Image 1 (cartoon, rainbow, N blue to C red):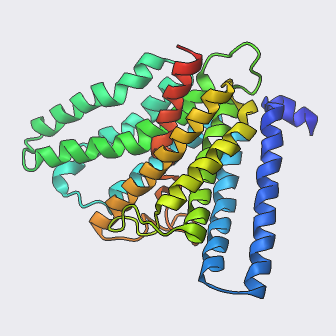
Image 2: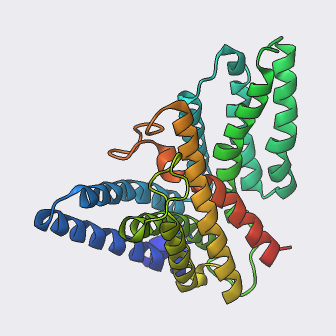
Length: 317
């Protein structure tokens, strides 16, 4: 086992957290099933459904984290591909937007190649600058001026959310090594994903138990002030407890954890607003029992880039 870990270059801090996550999921499954048998109800059914979806998502993320670094980039890039395809498929695009879709899909391997090579400037500018300019030009030369404003607003926004945002997870693996920090990029990736997803869980639990004051009842009726604040407090405490996965100081990890919690909330309600505008409940059926890929990683579409830039400013600038 140690030889395998050494071959895969898995930092010991990450292997410890893998064990912790698996233990949490096992305990959550046991407690949920016992609760369901003793006092069945809608709340425990929803919790069990979420736990099952987290087993599915955890398996995907752990596989991406533990395999060869090059395959990790491919795995996250595939996640971007699936998320973009899912978001595009639920939209109301007409034929006028489809001619530019090829370039949106092509941007995925290019963006992740830049991340793999560690070319920061190309990584940061390719999609928001060069891809946007090219897609605008392409739409015009195709003589597709009908609803061009909508196309140039919606299509780049989808690419930003599902490709540009999520690709920051991959670039964490290409950041330069910091002296005295041994968890490396895999530790940073684990910190980001774990804190983002546990924040969603804690906001859900706090909201169900103590939630009274709704924040955006027309967009996400389940979101409450109590759930948001409880999630923030929980995220700060959890962030401090796993600070060893980052090179951040105590005050830095507290700030980052709080910002990630709020940003995750924004990502969740943004996706909820999109689904309500289209008139659907879930973005797909990719994850058994809990909708599509975007239903589970909506928070990560925003927290990934925010975490990357906060970290870079604090530790690499």
